[in-house]
Length: 444
Image 1 (cartoon, helix red, strand yellow):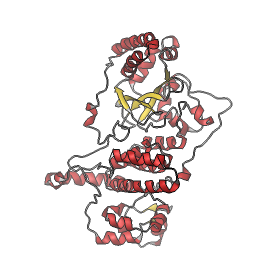
Image 2: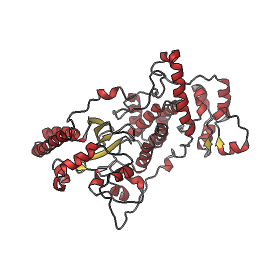
Image 3: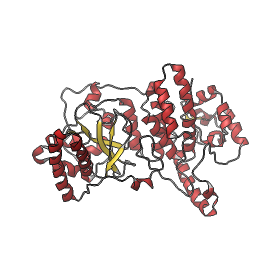
Image 4: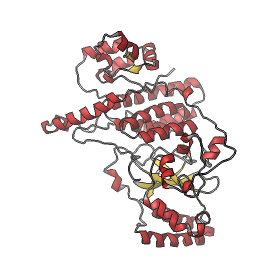
């Protein structure tokens, strides 16, 4: 039997690890599954009003006892990057402002994820296709409305440049590429459906996190695809990347615009396949002319430009970006396990043959998730995001509930609610396939 704590009280920061481990499972289980709203004051709550206790839940009494016997020192179950600067008096005011700002966001975030994290609540839903199916017209606003993110200027310029005489599908098809995702709106191929959630999974491949929006794939049964990667749903994409979900979760940056991404891809393809060399060269020439016309450089993306912004690579390798104050060290701390160790645990879990063995391995992940929740409770939201991404990248169904809980919590606290909606829909309809059109999802 394993327990993953996905809904920790705000006062957990004052509890020793030893006390946490000793906490009776029954008390925890009762607390976690209590449907009432979490009181933001936790064990420090002084309310005696019965109506308050009727509407809000509080941590087990043992937490209150431990909390009262402890000082107010910030809990750090694992090493932060460098603690020396915390002592500098010049940083105290800045630290205070950061903590007050992030703590306010934590107080506002009272949603109980324990119910959502239950495996029984994550169900694949099927819907019938309307008899008289209609499609959206070519409208940029439809892309924003249905995919919840805007597409950059190079996306539209690419479509216009290659769509001479409405031949863009034929042109890209000659080099074994297919337009997918938001391009279906421009092509008039996105059906109008009542269930809006499925649009968030339209051509969303198995290992695509919410930050990654696929727009091109290799034709046929290949799961190789190219898409835009953005750190924040309200910002422009940082780069275009590639992934082959049939192989692994790795997101490999290619270029900063789609002209360069396809150009670089075709340069590689024409060298691999001599039968496609001539077709690739024709499209390459078109891309060169259009890129020069619109002033889009045909350069490969250099990850060195991103190193200063990312706080950690995560298992998919593209890295994540969250607000992080180097002086106060607020925003992120390392997970309790290295990427290498997490990969080993995930491999063992994948290869486990019976439930007892799986439960034993899952119990090893409990501290990782618990301490990630503690870090989020102390305003290190990046740690919760990293934990959720890594669990998602494992590709294991057993870890999807915990991945969903971690990610929804982190995205909400980072004000990235769009990503929270995308990951929830993705988990609901997630499947490993080369054909992930919304219509195929509905009839699968």
